[in-house]
Image: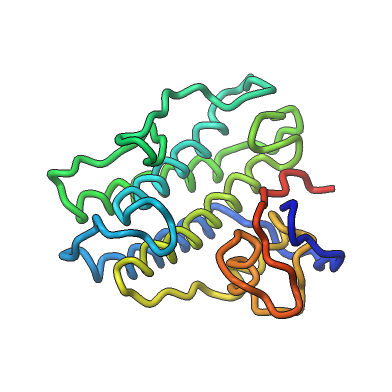
Amino acid sequence: MTDGSVSVVRESSPPVTAADVQHAVALALSALRAAADADWHVPAGTLDWDCWEVAEHMSDDLFAYAAQLGPRHPALASPVPFRCEPRRPGGPAVAISADRDAGPVGLLQVFEATGAVLAAMVAVAAPDPLADQQPFGVDDPDCFAAAVGVAEVLVHTRDVCLGLGLAWEPPAALCRRVLSRLFPLAPADTDPWLTLLWATGRGELPGQPAVTSWRWHTGTG
């Protein structure tokens, strides 16, 4: 995170794990399946993408993070070079997409499947300080993959829920662990979910400047 970062260092918390990935995906599915019959080609919150595109983007991210944990000798300067391209000008660039003829039910199956792939890869990945690859950095690539996967699910499910008129608020403890791993300088004494939204440029936080540019914190130091 570049703009809006603060000097409050949060205490360490348990790592984000494969079980957390499974939990986040299950919660998102429970919320999103309530709109399986809705029109998913409406804007997702304040994003320029529609709800279908955001859901595909989530699936693509989960797949991509899992893939980075696969090679035993990963490239050090770039991710695994899957070809990614948008389906329309201005749309998200993805390597994984859902068959539109399968409708939202099929789209959510793709999301569930890619979440399972990431959880499985995190569960079997051996901690390896040599796994110095983008976007993971040099430390605990398995924990980082889990944390960033969970974060993508939490914030993008909120984007889709806004577009579909659904309620969405993930567990505070899960948000707190994600913040500890990915945004260690974020305030530690504020509501974890609102803080995660603020840290990803999706909301205001009392007493804090607006975040207009941010990034994952890839190291543990």
